[in-house]
Length: 295
Image (cartoon, rainbow, N blue to C red; front, side, top):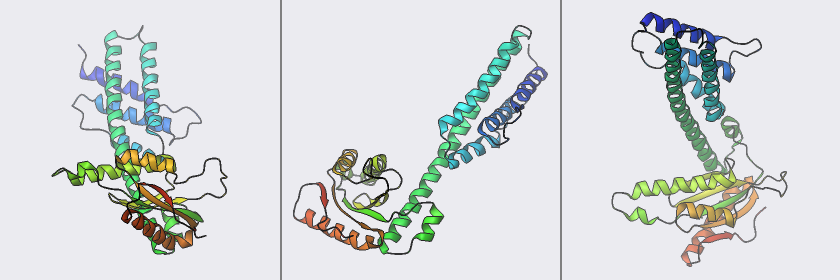
């Protein structure tokens, strides 16, 4: 029967293997850090007493990678590479080691994999959600400043969001979804509709498109990259509006005008005025250009 001392010795051996850093490997690179976190997990799980939670470095590292933009699949792939190296170590020693020790080692490393996968994924997703919320808040603040005609240079530098010299200014109307009329479910249905619209907007236009939207509509600013040529320009088009309409599950109406960034307040006023007139006259949903775009 395996004793606590045997388990501790086995864990120490696996920790030593994971803690080894080949020459030329940077202390802070992904492979080194994930192996360090795995070693911490094995050390925690290999103690005779019940483990007292997860090592802090697992969640901390995952949160840092989320903020730096490292993909979650890359992080988990590095963890799996570390697990693979331990399993290979156990397999190499299978003939000379006690079979029970080999099995115990395999069980220990699988438990460690479960710990780091759960802890890292949870911390990564939570931090990613925080970063996305921060970006959304910064983008909304920037749109508000642009629509008010305020100087945004300093704000753009602080948020890391670049300001284009020219924008498409889109006024958007989003009618109520049928689910919003369900008693007790209206607010939730409106929020879900708005999230679907925002996701559909981000898919073709990317993160550079700035929006200030509510469940009833709002304003979208799409940067016009004059240096990019005509190959794949960002633009609010009828096709993009159709994608958003499908996501919203309600017919959308939008007006669009293009002009220099300093004219955004005037452009937005004209776009929303036309949008109001179109709705008042009963025109069908769709995308409508504002006559005589201001440059």
